Structure formats: C-alpha cells, structure tokens
Image (cartoon, rainbow, N blue to C red; front, side, top):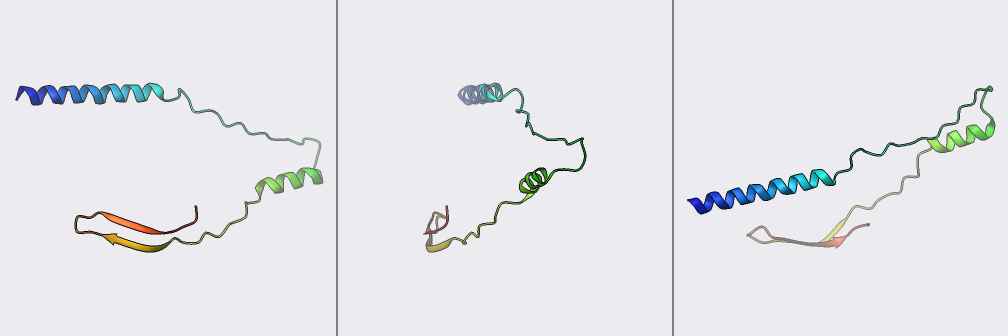
Length: 89
C-alpha cells in the first residue's frame, strides 16, 4: 500500500513540474498584429489607391483539390488498420 501511494505522489509531482515548465515556456503576450493603413484626407481616392485597395480585398484563386483515393484498407480483429492510397499534399 505504501509503495502505491509513493508512486502516485511521484507521478503527481512530475505532472506538476511539467505543467509549471510548460506554463513558463509560454510567451508572456501574443504579438500584436500591425496593420498599415493609408488615410486620404484630401478628397476622393486616386485610381492608384483604388487599385491597391481592390487588390488587397480580392480573394486568392481557389485551387481544386482532388479527394484521396484508397488502394488498400485492412483492419484486423484487434482493430489495427493499414491504409494505403494517394492524396494531394
């Protein structure tokens, strides 16, 4: 009985030390995202400013992704699985 309690306490101490170590490794604060903005107070935007603004709002082109194809799928009674096939990276 004593041995089980000692092993449990040692395990609890190791988990605690690991949690404290992980907490200390976290950055103190997430880096702030800086955005650049151009404010035109002189009147309507120039054509160059409009093109820049429009280009920044356009979505990137959508690349079609092929679904994966499976060549071999084997599952044994113990639940171990082997899956072979092809897919895009």
